[in-house]
Amino acid sequence: MVESQAPRIRTKAKHDVLRITAMIQVKQERSHLPTAEHSALIDLDRALPSGAVVTDPDVCAAYARDESEAEPRLPDAVVRARSTEDVVAVMRVATRHRVPVTPRAAGTGRSGGAVPTEGGWVLAFERFDAIDEVSTRDAVAVVRPGAVLGDVHAAVEAEGLFYPPDPNSWASCTIGGNVAENAGGPRAFKYGVTRDWVLGLEVVLADGRVLNVGRRTTKGVTGYDLTALVVGSEGTLALVTRATLGLMPRPEVVRTLAVHLEDEAAMADAVSACLRARVTPRCVEVMDSITLGLLREAGVPVPAGSRAMLIVEVDGETDAADRDLERVGNALLDEGTLEVLVAKHEGDREQLWSARREMSRSLRTLAVNKLSEDVVVPRSALAALLGRCRAISERRGVRMPAYGHAGDGNLHVNFLWDTPDEKPSVDLAIRDLFEATVQLGGTLSGEHGIGALKAPYLALEQSSDLIAVQRSIKATLDPLSILNPGKIFPRAGHGGC
Ligand code: MLT
Ligand code: ZN
Image (cartoon, rainbow, N blue to C red; front, side, top):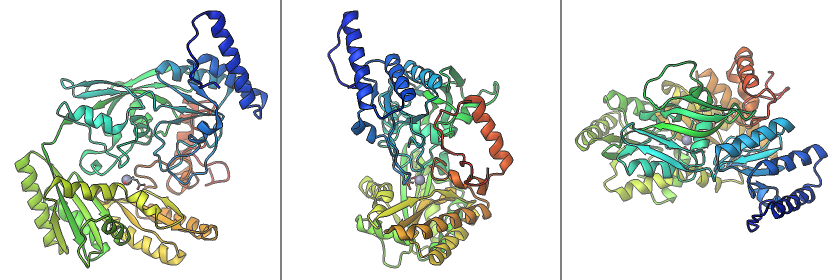
């Protein structure tokens, strides 16, 4: 098989024999493919180092889906890139044969962004994972797309530095995926999202050209900001092969509060209370009454009568963090919260966070199917959004637990159902949620991206002119539409654009 670990054969003649054997095997394994796909695969295998191209259906099956409800699709091949040169080679062959290429690293996405919805090849980045540099003098890290975020955190923190973006999948998600989706996370409330920390990128275009966009310096306004454009473009404009990330000094301490509320609707006022205390917490997370039950099951102490909970954290130098904690705690008590509990030990904090981090998975245990959205509204509209969710849930008869990043107005509204006959009501409830979000001045996605799942709804938020301008940017950079096709933009007949 193409991916087999055959011993290295040094003489040219033997090498050629090995190649020919590999080609025949590609042919046999994929004999169901039409001739054009066949010859594309053979060219691909020729252009990549031995073992990089995998066609074994069992291996390909692992690349057919991500962590969303998007319909899986088996790719024709998976290419495991290890260098910029590999990525260039893949895109040159893909351009020549017009093969769709879906980039993927850890596959932790929630919107179907890494699912090869149009078939073709999956370009896997998990083995292209080096951390090239951590510079304390320049406060930057230079990393490759497959580097796991948790490893990047550890590498920079070992130098007394800090890279704030922290999507909850940080232990397994990668920088490439974070850049593609402009990932956020709880700490975004104080520190912003991935785009705020990416200074520069090396990218490969659809035709295989390599561009260096952005910079290594803190300041820099030369030319259009293509770095900002690529971040969040969901792998549809260019493939990231190196990222230069800005860093800051690591905060000395973190202090954590668990705040209990008698009423879900009180959460928006609680968020405002934190800000009125003239403190910017590093995160203000929320759990509604249903998700709070899961927290209780995970062993987190939840007082009787609590209907919603906030996790509020402050960080900085020890004295300042302690002062901020006191201010926020008092402001929240003045606001009429039920109880404010301080995490006394790292163990308390870890118990709280591990239950919060697992929330998405824990919700899966409550129903056969779960679909998670990540709508955002202006902070002042958070209570109204929750009210609308409850009304939708009742009208459509669908369970809709919610949790998320209250400080950012970013709610993960989940839809749970067991049987296929419930799905039409779920679809209506999802559309209702998006319509309510837009009416409240919000946006469809705060951090998970539009991907394949939300593409049909894009026109609910964006005008046809705006969508057309974005399509023309896509056409300039990827005229054959081979880079992650089927993502972001609705297909004809879905959403009217
Ligand atoms: C989270 O905040 O836990 C993540 O964005 C994942 C999710 O809710 O699906
Ligand atoms: Zn989230």
